[in-house]
Length: 497
Image (cartoon, rainbow, N blue to C red; front, side, top):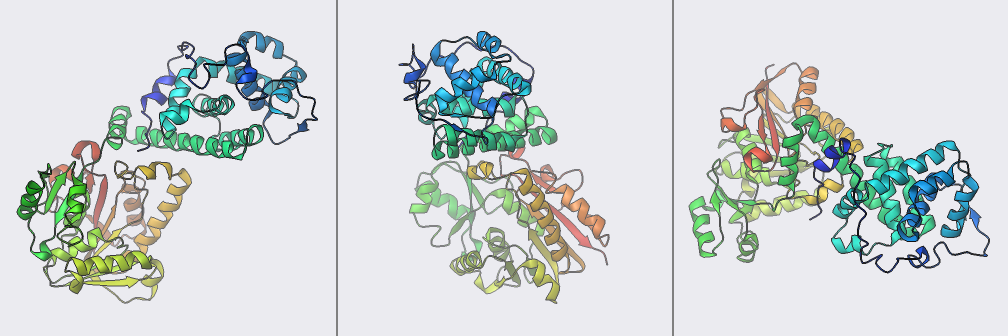
């Protein structure tokens, strides 16, 4: 699992300027004690070839990278280099040309100031920067085997983002160019991937600190990096009770705890593979489903005989749980834009013996709502979201989210809420839910919806879930740190007209 960086590495660095001791040279550099030329074949060695002028590479980054190489492997001193560098752009560019094989545009005074800042700061914070870089590599060996020039480029990029607060994507772009030209395209791709991870982590850390405070944000990230637990839901539609599930788990010697909140659920920390090998999932006897998702179904409160519209149904965990609670009477109309995932939902419904109460509809909810006369007293919109509440199980999501994504998601959530509201009959209820812990996807979306739709009002969820999950506004919220469950949110909105 990729590591989400500790919050303290961003927070403490803003107030502590304690220079670190020089790092002991790693395996990658133990043999480079006297000459930088052995750090990379031909590095800093004189060349008689014609060198190209490259106007795309940032001059201050190229010079900084070469200076750092000279300091770490050539025995140079940063302060002397800074003195020699003042007003001596040609001298600096000469080193770049001999080292990297190309020249950039001439350095101006601003470039030279940046070189002094970046080189001095990178040396001062080298241990810290290396810790961050190593944390975002796939494993320690990747960091330890990294070639020296590539590492200097990464150190520069990390210092610019973390300490100088330069525009992050500009930093990424410029350092990728440097790595590609000075090394090779693959090196640029590696710089791109690692720096983008840093940008994303910094964004999430700042966001969580803003909404949660420093200490709770730290606890959240510790939770996200811990080994996840999983919950199993006994399939009542096949006559399986939680007691049956517990008995089977005992026979497999799988440690477990019964849910404190839902009668059909059992929590498993280890041993899930044993359950899978036993074939219980294939036979439809149980499903893997987090209790936080089960509690969203409790907020819906399905009752036998009801018709329920599930607006973004696939992959169908909540759809199938709602269907099982109908006890064979009523209907869940499962709408989704993804035909393949909808087909899987239909097959799983048959496996779990709830296909008689599940009706699948392949459609884009927004266009379907414009032409459909469907009405229901209960409509669930489990909206597409960032997934920031499920990072302990979906580690990949932490590297696939950007601020721009959040803006697009919020617009989509608003559009889907507007569409879903058209299906709600007078006196009926619209349930809006996400697997996010971000207020901008949760409370803010509800607030904006109520401004656009004054015919709806909040129906507090305290009648449907334990009080510990009820917010001051009357919403359902599962807090990973507080409840040791995935993060989730749900609001009940009643149509009054």
